[in-house]
Amino acid sequence: MYFAALLARTEDGWEASDMELDDVESLSDLINLARAAAVDDDTVVALIEQEDAWFGVVRVDGEEDPRYFVSNAALASRSSYGSMLTEELLGSDEEDDELDELDLDGTEDGEEDSIAAFADADDDAEEAGAGAEPVPAGPLGDPRLLDDLGVSHKELMALDGDALSEIADSLGATEVLEAVR
Image (cartoon, rainbow, N blue to C red):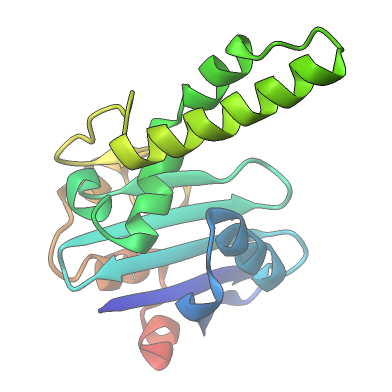
């Protein structure tokens, strides 16, 4: 079972909203929800946890690139929402390698063959997990993403159990988070 919430910083403190994970099919969906919750392009922190097994933090500051942290990448990678985060953090060179192999000579036959080869290679890689980087057991991402908000990287790395409540407490957002829990 998952719990997810968005904390949006405002002039008066933090506002919390429950995040419907049913509406999140990709990391882009999650980022779009966070940006939509922002007040005047200020900071939004998305918090996700799965039954004390792992937690994830996504920080969105306006149009800047989001920053991510996952407490236990190996456990998170085994869940649908956690795998979105770990895949983003680990990156994937598979697509780049496959693009390098394409025959882009401009001929109609070459283009059709290269597109079919790309689709076949993509299907094979997904089924076999070929070239996948091993997922580390432990934290992954940017542990300093909350440093300026009152949660040091050392504190973030040491959290377990009810981590989201401890993060909210450090941010001064305990009451608003508990209201949506």
